[in-house]
Amino acid sequence: MSCKYMDGDTIAAIATPAGESGIGIVRISGPDALSVLASVFRDKHGRSRASFESHKMYFGKVVSRDGEMVDQVLAAAMLSPNSYTGEDVVELHCHSGRVVLRSVLELVLEHGVRLAEPGEFTRRAFLNGRLDLAQAEAVADVVHAKTKQSLKLALNGLSGRLSAEVSALRDRLIQVVAHIEAEIDFPEDDIDELAVNSLRGIIAETISDIEGLLNKAASGRVYRDGVSVVIAGRPNVGKSSVFNAIVKERRAIVTDVPGTTRDVIDEYVSLSGVPVRLMDTAGIRETEDVVEREGVSRSRESLDQADVVLYVVDASSLGQSYDATDDERTLSSIPRDQTILVLNKIDLVQGTVDEAPFGELTPPAVVKTSAVTGAGLVELEGQIVDLVVRENLSAGEAVVTNVRHEDALRRAKKHLEDALGATDRDTPLDLVVIDVREGLNALGEITGETVDDDIIDRIFSDFCVGK
Ligand code: GDP
Figure 1: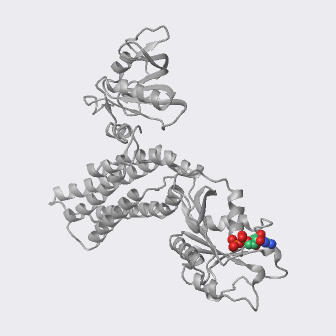
Figure 2: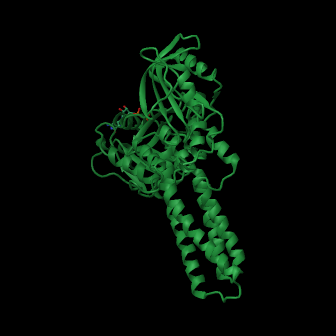
């Protein structure tokens, strides 16, 4: 494989997170990586080495220009083209501490190496054909994966499942373009009606495959980005108890999303692999109390942003004398198909429960629970997942999880529909081919074949330095 960047400069960065830990890695990539390694590295006998075998670890130390030890390290060289970036790559596995890593990095930078920009290693991997753009974006998804299921989908993307599918669609369209252009080049031949029909068939099939990918994209995004589930209802119906019961069952997942407000408490949980931000709100009811009113208004705000609302009611209090005013007011202000009615405290109910206590305002999804005995909580979890994951995603299939890819697919579909419509209206083939080409270009944006530099810049600037 050729390396477009072999003439370029050599870059370096600390590739592991800041802080004290067992190992921290300084990564170097570019044409001078090996000579820098030779200059800074001494083996355990204090000798310098002229050459390094690819993909082998060398134990020794990093020394400054005047021979002073900076750290004891394991060094590895990955020779071009068999490296992450496709260039010569060197990794110095140091002890991880702020001063140690900075000292090693500074030493490396003294050898004419420049500090890498955010995402520059992965960008070079892309430019050298080691990864396509969709795979490069999947690197970030792997790093940020919130649940095991999110990780599985990200690894799917990284191994090129989506890219392969998109390439197959493009190959088909390239054939269509070639075919049409041949027809255009030889206008003296009558256009073969059969040939046009078969082109139409190929375009239609491609549109339907794109639709297949788009249908699953919303679910893909759910696993990648997660959803917010807000628990609402009047005071004392058991909202906090339901919240705690779910949080206790489902291990909280680590996140760096900033914290809580006084009135809305949140926790991150994994529900069947869906990353969920679960929020408990202050009870919503009409109130004169100023402090409570503030809580209520914040609760309403979080309701507006919820993907799913768990509307909790005390099932044991339902009956003739039940005043449904507050419930009905809230239920009428949130979308029914995003709401699950939770009939809680079912353990206190003797006999049957009215499962449609709010008439037409009762959402289609209803679950009976007891936060005390745990009854119904598994079913509740299933209902939440069903509401947000509309399509089953089977392991190993190509799944779109990225808004940029989704947008490109939508545009590709639109152009191909225009092309198909044009063939129906006997539009000249040289106009049809323009639409097919546009479709082809839109698909090419996903893998990066046809994408503007500023989009590439934006994608990689979201990465951190060292990636
Ligand atoms: P919130 O104000 O809606 O958050 O309600 P809490 O979770 O604080 O619960 C109010 C009261 O109801 C507490 O005494 C809970 O122990 C009780 N509670 C909550 N859920 C249940 C339930 O499912 N069954 C029973 N028996 N009591 C419950």
